[in-house]
Amino acid sequence: MRITPVIGVMLLSVPFLAIRSSAPIIDPPTKQITTAVITELPKKPPVHKKKPVIVAAVPHSGVELHCLAKNIYFEARGEPLEGQKAVARVTYNRKRVLKMDSLCDVVYHKAKGTCAFSWVCQGYSEPKHEEAWRRAIRVAEDFLRNPNCCAGLEKALYFHADYITPLWAAERAFIRQIGTHLFYK
Image 1 (tube, rainbow, N blue to C red):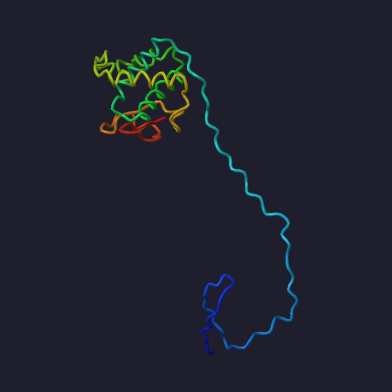
Image 2 (cartoon, helix red, strand yellow; image 1 turned 180 degrees about the horizontal axis):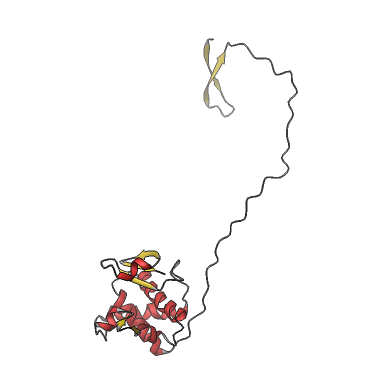
């Protein structure tokens, strides 16, 4: 078989390289070819996505706003905004799941002498960094207006910093890490 290059011009006057073959042409098949007509493509099974739980604004008092802001400040003031909102979400989730009367009850809750949030037992009471405190208040206000934040943390009830390993962590289902905090359900 010998291949001979042929240079030609396409419709748009663009040069191209065609190859002419001296190989014999194969006869077309003698058997009739039938074509199938596809009238409908197979349908994909429906994808069932979990719909997010949408929560309305959280009714609260000014005192509850203050308690939530303090918890955000003392637990997550150095964290990114998402981490601060996640702390607010855990605080709210505990109120809802444990059926507590207020966010302050959650923040100052003690069980067998152990505080729910470490800063309470460590005796911190008033924020010292004004800018971080104002930010914590804004985060708390935003969260209480729209608690639908923090994807995946709808059932989170616990968190801790990544530089400690509390005994309870092995007994909980890990959800994800945000900043230096690890969240569990």
